[in-house]
Each structure stands twice: as structure tokens, then as C-alpha cells.
Length: 130
Image 1 (tube, rainbow, N blue to C red):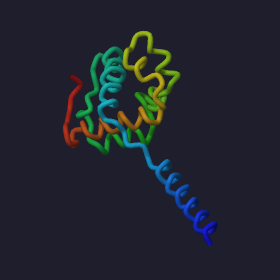
Image 2: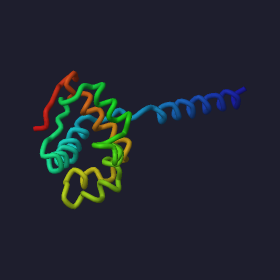
Image 3: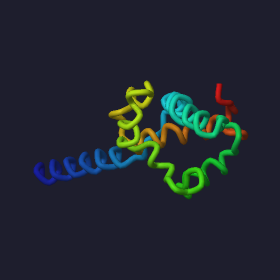
Image 4: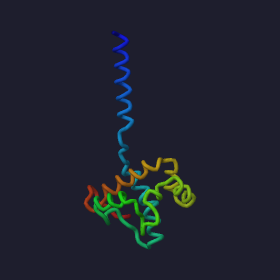
């Protein structure tokens, strides 16, 4: 009887551990703000001569950008700009890319999504690029 209880307890503990490991990563909006402002805004300002502020779009519009995964005119994906390859390519001239070089791509992407959701036109704290 004791061994059956022990096996059931062990199975329950393993299942609980697997469930907690499978939980989704909650984006860190503060880290997302740093990356967005120092990487995204810097590039957009240099390339387009105009920053794209988080409050330029609503939460739904930002969600659509990430869902379609199209950047600019569609020649690059949004995810490309969070890739380790991209960050490695700009880290010599971009402190945020260097600082977050080891951060997993999916976490950094979720961080920026959290920042944009919070700072969107209809978010809790609408924010510009400054």
C-alpha cells in the first residue's frame, strides 16, 4: 500500500512540475520598453526619419502586426528583428542588442508585446517614443 501511495505522489508531483513548466512566459514590459526604444525606435528613426511610437497604434493593431509577422513592406518578418542573428549583427553599435544578446528570442518578443500592449493608444499607459 505504501509503495502505491508513493508512486501516486511521485506522479502527482511530476505532473504539477510539468504544468508549471508549460505555463506561458509573461512578458516583462520594462525590458520590452528598453529593447523597443533602443533597437526598434533607433532603426525606424534612422531608416524612415520618423519614430513609430507605441501609442501610434491600438492594442488590436499591434496584435495584428505580430500575428501577420510582416515588417515594413513585407520583405522581412517582425520576428527577424528579435532573432539572435539580428542582435549579433547590430550589437557592436547598439547597447540594448548587446545587453540582451543571450535572451531567448521568444521571451524578448513577448517583452516587447507586453510593452506595446501597455503603451498602445488604448493601453493602460499610452506612451510615445521619448
